[in-house]
Image (cartoon, rainbow over all chains, first blue to last red; front, side, top):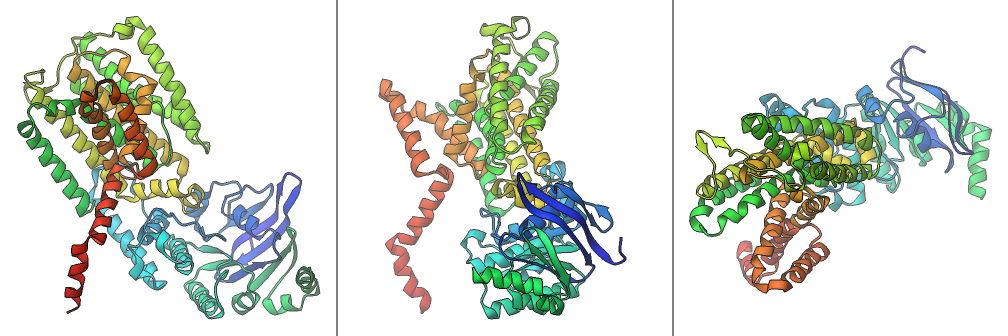
Length: 257
Length: 327
């Protein structure tokens, strides 16, 4: 494995029946970078994320995370290894409060099982206090601490987005996958999101970003991978990608449609 | 576990202590209801917190009852030991049913438990040498609690206290579980299995464990039933009873374990309260259940809470108060 690479994907393919959602995707994500995956709709970006998080099983190919093979592992093992994600369409636990959602995000940071919970052992209570404190810190960071005890379903879309991000950060992952985090945001909000992603990177997290907002991608990414119909067509720093003729053709082509 | 639940437990305990004195002609009807409530607490953990349906809880109830009956009558064991054997057998069987059916997504558990419930009922009826067949067997020794033998009818009060102490303990265990990392994980699974899995929750393992715990509640209830009634036969353990338990949980409200207790009480008492209506009572009983299911889908417990909250908001005295606050 390349030194300093946190994630290494080789020959990754995913077929649904006759549909090739991903075909021969390769990438090396260096630790501590913002790595963007872009491409027109249907390019396989979300399928790529699903393969990385064990939501779907890749048909062929290898995924190595911190030098450990991940392909084929169930999602909860991948989460334990240190990968967290958000979803393109928000998937919060709708019958729970904001704080409870973030506490579920802390799941891998705790260890209380059935006996400890039933007997309410002192170790369990200590752990609960610790997790609550950590969860509140994540809420504060995203400026939604005042909403902690609100049912999550009562919040407007933008704040639900933040809760989902807080929940992913609460897992204290090493690699954070963001699936179109700027969807539905206005320019100012997108700017704030960009700053937030950069501050997450400052802390040493690696961010893998699927995004349609090109100005955001070009501004904050260290490296960009372009997919088209599941096939990687270009990879490089943002400036290089902006000038890549194949990429321009795809985007102009799709816009011309 | 939060002030609300603690208050609830204290109030319930006080009510249990006072009831035999306040309603001496009535309270003993709550003995069987308490046994149902214990099953329903376990079932609401499975149904309301993990979103899984068991159509075989009457069979686990039977397993506890028959294990206790057989070990105490045939082998002279202490009831206190027999309960644990019942729990042990239940855990083994629940694992055998749960592991294959809960590893798959979908309602395979409902089908597997339905089959198990039918098989258990047939075994209880047909394996005469072991279970006494359709006529069952009696002379099951009574519980011996701190030197007191709980013998009806003189000891109805002691039995009542014993059963409801078990209910309160069952509630305490369930509330502790819910208000913990484990409980949050279960609720997360109910709301979104994939999202929960991606956050590091081994969903299949959690569902299997909560199913086993839920079955253990029914088994303990069965053991208590055997020693309280002194007699077992297959009648109270049919699949219809499994469905009755589910109905109790839904009527009471499945998003809180208190709902199991409320549902068992309401559905257990309704036939009694409607007894004067003679043959009309079944129609009225059905109508009341239908109305609850249609108009209070969250169950009577949360329904009543919402009603109180609503009336506090709407009633005129509230409006008269608010200008005063601004002064």
